[in-house]
Length: 280
Ligand SMILES: [Zn+2]
Image (tube, rainbow, N blue to C red):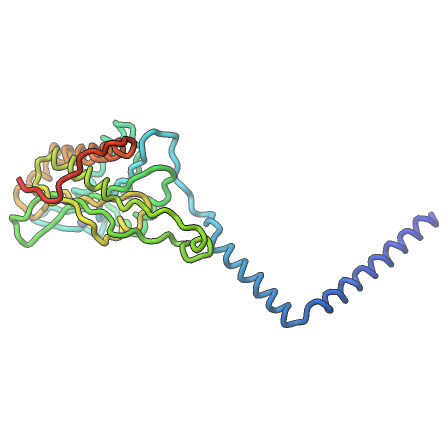
């Protein structure tokens, strides 16, 4: 008993001494100004951590292992945003029609797919790019649009790819400063393959491929293309686009192009690229 209380007393005395020593040590070592600097540094490091740490709400889309890339299919416009319109034909309706057909064809060929919209709803350009950027693993982005022109004789199909890719959001943090990431694929080869295949399939006028500053191709980190699948202001093309057969042929052409591009990525000999400007 006596031994125990002596031990307790000793322990408390020791603890008090320890605390006193620690307090004096801290006061000796740090004046209030350097403490303030210390707190500032801790807050700064905390801020960096918040910027770098992944957003817990940011869910990534992943697919079962596949030998083929996922295809993000983007039906242009939708909802209040009708896109081009000519003599009762609405671009937003045609894009969705081709997108749904493309999905069926790609799924039939074993490609996993994601649609940015499956019905007549408005989806912002930022949301479309974000859907593509959430996909885990190899993937491509294909945006479907139709064209219009004041001159009704203007016709043909053209495919765009990104002139530059927007830098990732965390590029300005120290992670971005110290890790030089590989330049992103701007989608030029994908555009060439899709254009070549679509023209071969439909026999439409070839308006070629072009690099352009477009939001969805620029803000998607995966290879991305935007296809303008014909002019709804052109009587002939508008008539064709309203036919199921033609929409299907167009979708088959896009799927063929994606397939050719993917095969070319895994071969040493490149496939022939579409000619930049070729009129029939
Ligand atoms: Zn459009």
